[in-house]
Amino acid sequence: MAISSEEAAKTLAEAVEAERRSARLRFYHRSSPHLIMWGTIWLIGFGVCALLPKYGDMVWNFLVPLGIVGGVAISSRLPREAGKGFRAWRMGALGVLIFFFVSATYFIMQPHMSRQFVAYPALITGCAYVAVGLWAGPRYVISGIAVAALTLYGFVTFSTDMYFLWMAVVGGGSMILAGFWFRTV
Image 1: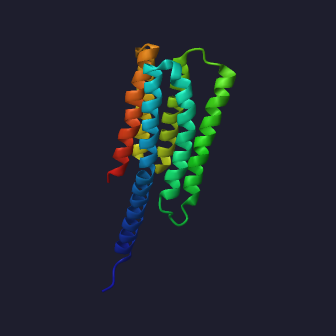
Image 2: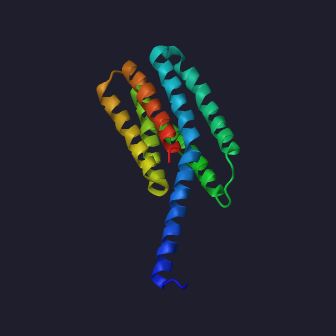
Image 3: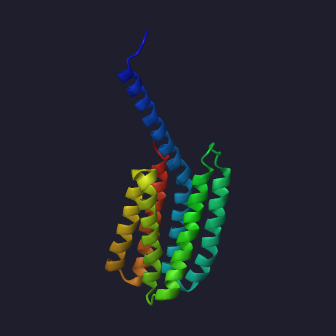
């Protein structure tokens, strides 16, 4: 039985769409443990800043390198996909770029309020998620907008002590929830 060129084109388009959707879902699934880990780091780091402020810098100086090592460990344990090594490399490079961009901006602009030190990397994180989402899918866009919007809301609404608590629960919590959301199909 022969099929028409229209049927063949439709079948091919459906196959391409299925492959695109499958790749997006795999990317979400691979991103999930990173979001959960960094959300937990935010929860702990900002929680310590809110509840035990004199230990905040020390805790962050421990948590950030731990998160970097944890991210490498998570990535190394995920199964490799043929031809997809460039994506993990680029995501790691994006993280390094953001770290140096935020550090350089702090050096140049020298924020004078601790809330500025908190809000700026959180806004950059939200922006990076939206940018990744333009290619990777709408869940990243939604998660990035949520992190940025909640960061701004807390910045204009709360005092410094409450802002740290806000970022612990809402900032870290939204990343953890996004990580679990990314696991769902």
